[in-house]
Image (cartoon, rainbow, N blue to C red; front, side, top):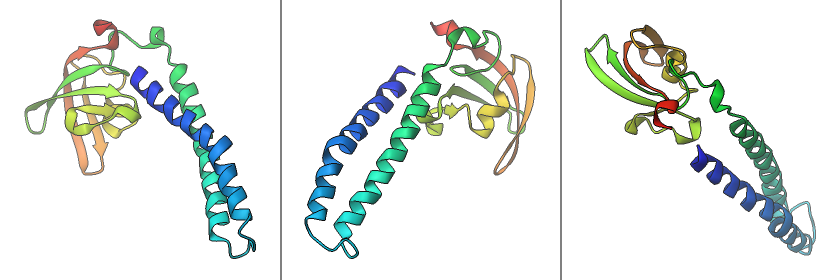
Length: 155
């Protein structure tokens, strides 16, 4: 989680610098070129400025959300953020391992799935022995939770 916070904070810091220092220079230079109606540099700088402001708002919101995660509220016996689960695919009889992570860390080929993904949402709150049917874009997956290790088990 700290890695995500650090990455988002670094992006925020860079964008704030761009908004305060670099973009005003670009806008000033574009204004010096004259006619604003057909001034592509000016319009591009204004578009970039609008994007940067919007992204700063998104980053501040996301950092606030992530900073508010209360570890004491994460269950110790149910699948939740940070859990590692071993599942039995009831359709193929194959075992699968996943770790539930924040969306910024999701990497399905490494078994890191977002808590916001269909599978992540479907597994939330499940316990060892529970069976679950999860609708995904390609159909329905049926799993049994075989093993569970929560974030508390690794702390």
